[in-house]
Image (cartoon, rainbow, N blue to C red; front, side, top):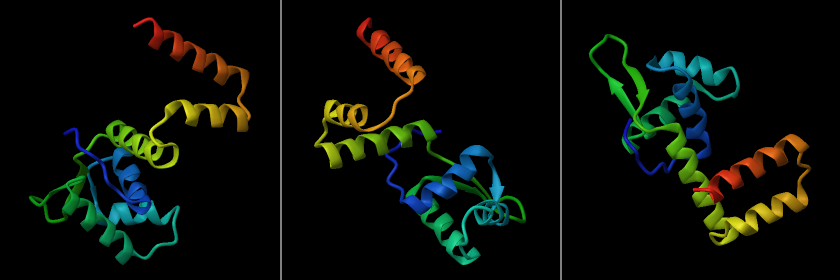
Length: 126
């Protein structure tokens, strides 16, 4: 999979998650998977698939009688791009402000605190 900047909408994320879970899939299979969670028409889902192909996020195998779609972008790369975009938009790029806000406002379990400490220690020891 290529590393690419992932500029996909919230609705497109739902389609991508289906394909990151299992690929390749036909459009009918994607419609079935998405429809199990969302009350969207098949036409809407087909439009999302087409947009993702145009954006270069999905590839399509046209060699079979039914086209099969597969991701061209890595899920982890897209998650990182979305995270960076969110931090920039909401916190003016400050990870410190974001973390401080979450730590102050959200309930964090002892296990989550230990995991955060482990990650910070690992990052600090590099």
